[in-house]
Image 1 (cartoon, helix red, strand yellow):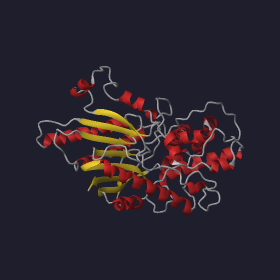
Image 2 (image 1 turned 45 degrees about the vertical axis):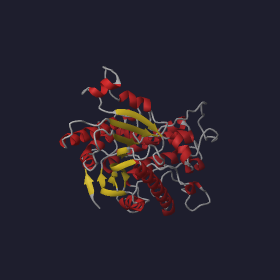
Image 3 (image 1 turned 180 degrees about the vertical axis):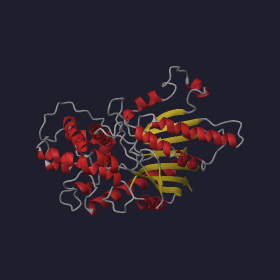
Image 4 (image 1 turned 90 degrees about the horizontal axis):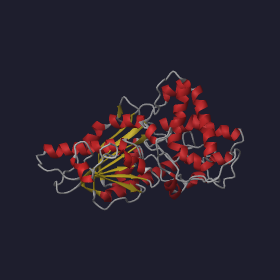
Length: 417
């Protein structure tokens, strides 16, 4: 297995945020469950999941430095993928789609890198004219597209002109932009319409928690845990099957939407162990201090053990083999590159010797990717209590966290056969 290293921080790109707002204040204590949900079906997840919008302390805009560093560290791999894309006649628009775009500036940076690289290829091939470029930013309907669009030039600059002026000016963007709300596990675009697909830090999020994991009479029931790290093999294998089902659907949809000669660049959370109960960095994030904080709420009588057991993080960090099996079974794509990329810590800490800052950083990172699901399950007030306990526990283990919390990512370059 090939493992690449980079000097930066790898992290989940996908920060999750609820579109369901609680209309009534919740009292502290064991919740009745009347206003809370157990998220299992794909429909419920689609309605809940999106990155946290706005520009607040826990928003994606203020919690994406690690993702930005990681994306930049992989640019050489992305450009290798782009070098294999077929260039059509300049009369035909060139179309790029970011699947799981989020609402921060990272997606805009990446799309611009893609288009500028393609422009250089057209110029190097002797074309006197360039095609028009379109960029589609796709995410679930609850994504904060408004914040994203405000970050797009020319709105990000003071000099706001017409679309034609924007595209003609070297100081503005060189592409038409549009948002596409919907799940990438289903069709999003017309047939044979996309030249380049890009998806980073998204595909480890499952379309749903496997229903059998929530069945109390099943041996797969994930009792006492909120993640599969350290769970029994049958639970982890249920997650593995769900991941492979989801990835198969993803590839099937993209094979219909991609132009002949098109390519796709994918990066997602992965693991080096063949054991699915060892989720690597994701296990350290969700299976230690986060898990223990849930247990604290139970022991303090703030929630019931059943309430804890009904909560499961819908994330699966696959092995290289997990991923490869699905691509080969699909048969529509050639694997140009497939490797495990060694990342750094997801935490951005200015003072690593400040244990309290490390604790807050871990709690904020954990909340940025799971907070919406927590709030939907137990309410935002108990959510505050939960992540306060995460921060306190992490503060006491700050040195260990800085040393051991590392992520690996699967990076794949695929071309349509």
